[in-house]
Length: 224
Image 1 (cartoon, one colour):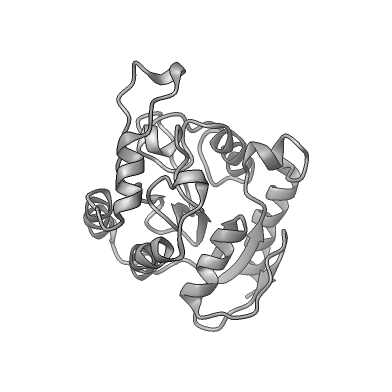
Image 2: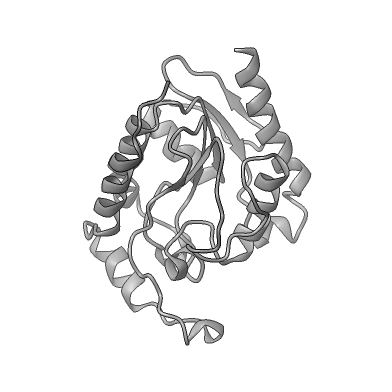
């Protein structure tokens, strides 16, 4: 049985939310102009911790909070088009109790799943530096230490894929949508294109394609 790690996760979330280790990211997130549609809202403008089921067997890793999604709402994959696409797929596969993710108090609950990011602050141009990836590694590793039931990781996009490879000490592994890497002593790795509008609006990533990755991870878990 997994230990009751909810309190430890909350403490980690508090530490992440207060982080100021990367001056470039701190400056960018705190000075980013609000989008016109959200000018009446108070932006979060802090690092974003992960969220989900403390007993999760599946972890999803994105790149970083979106400028007017997570950076605004305070929850990764919340309040933007990527969130809309991802939550439909998670709801369809039974990981989410609803197909929408709009705010921290919208009633969304995840079952068997935990969502996090390789970098916790919105980066300029959506491109964190290698140093910023390295600094945030400590938080990703801490989440893995607390989420002891995790057996599979789905990375959303090539940079998140590389971040997990670096954390697991993997070299020479190429990213591809649908890739699977079976690991000893670490959760298995699955690759998916990121659910950004650039990919979903063009059909590079369809909901069915993402659902297939999630269902494959579940099927693999059952046969292990």
